[in-house]
Length: 291
Image (cartoon, rainbow, N blue to C red; front, side, top):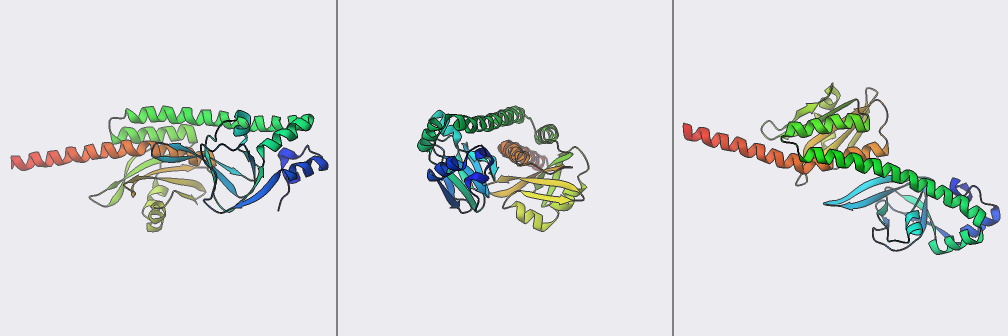
């Protein structure tokens, strides 16, 4: 098990200071899916990932959205210490995870007693927080802009064009496409794409891929191309697939953003599809009366 002295953020501390910090810290093991703290909690403790991964989630309309995945050596929870406000998000384990918990009040005392060393630690924390805020600012700006465009789309093709073209710009996709389920031929039809979709077509026709997509997103490497398939669902059933490929591996941020775009587009696509089906039904009714 790694000790505090192995964590970079505490590399400037002496053995005596490390020993003091160990006295106000505990190591916990979380099982997959276990919640460490919830949005709105009022504790002020700080945490560091020792092993495994922690998902940071935020409540949004319709559920929760993953904002970040934190891995080994990353510190989190520091904003509650700085602001002395309730937790702004929920933290839960993505897999079996070991975390270091540092008691907030005692950590403040430690900084006051060791101002020179404490300043170095605080400086690192501020840099981490600043980077995350810049990342989130970019993320929300992109999401807001795309959501605005999607909400004003007049038809399914317009929504597909926005998703496909903006994914190229924001995620750096080499190819992107939107497929929707056709109830008449019981296949996924291509609505719009920006390039060669043969790899997507091959995967979507694979029953094992579709089965996996019914449960979660699909990530694969095929013909030296990285592929990410996001789901669009209707009443829990797989209704559409937002497919993206890149020449480089998808970052966690890429996956979160593409998943967010799918989530944003989902209600608009379902609404437009219902309108389209109703129009087709009306046309059929009119033709019946003509005969």
